[in-house]
Image 1 (cartoon, rainbow, N blue to C red):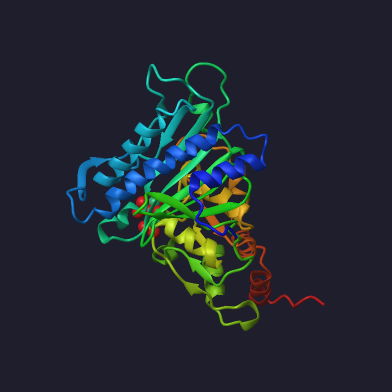
Image 2: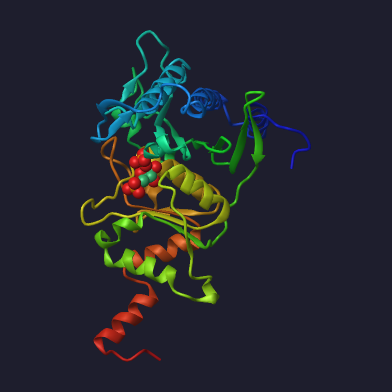
Length: 351
Ligand code: FDP
């Protein structure tokens, strides 16, 4: 542990020196994201005081009502990031198409996909919300970046992170060398290292899901949640239910305490609700880097190569053992299900 307060920029400097192959280019992008998030944080904490709450009246590409803070967060990130000279193209939850670097600006070799304000249904209740970001190397070689540059598998990310605006504001990121968390100290305007090298427990005792959707789920998901509620001291069940309804907040809590977050597909939405590029993939990279796991029920989230910017995916995310167990239920392979089927069909137990 460090014996003195270490700021984000000091920490990034030290990390860069440990990895001589690092060019420092995406470190600069990360610093700019951190700056934009300070600006967003300033508005979020004043949200109850100034006229930034309420709907703009417009709808975003998903048909959701856009709030003023969503727009502010989107524009702030765009303005700050498009001037870094390091980016070829950007994509945001709030924009249907990719966002080119403005004409006249230098074009760089990175791509940033971001969700400017995640969990926005919580804004008006002063509940935690967040910004999620994912950085990729561009693939195209010439000119401005394109959709192809944005649509890459999550395992190609060079950096992923989030800023959670809450009782204290935190920035958590990974560049593939551990997961590090910084708490924002508003009086000096700096993010200070508070959670170096975060490791998530192998198994937790928390499940996070919108259980209002229960009747719409597949049998596998229903059985998994029923199983987590059963009493069994050996596996630490029943689990506790915790659901903020703000992905960053639910993920952050489970990252520190252990547990599993689920947003499965259901009868109405086969791919669930959450988006691959700027929600599932960045959090999957952080989860894996911290020793956890992320799956769509059948494969690693990081292996998904999206075909469109706002593609959705079922998401099972968190402690590795919990995610593996959840997958076995989703795939109908869990011994608890097999035993139940055997009893129902009158087949005697083996052995
Ligand atoms: P929100 O709609 O409030 O922006 O993807 C967005 C998200 O929140 C996630 O942050 C959150 O985990 C999820 O949707 C909540 O969805 P439900 O309201 O369906 O539970």
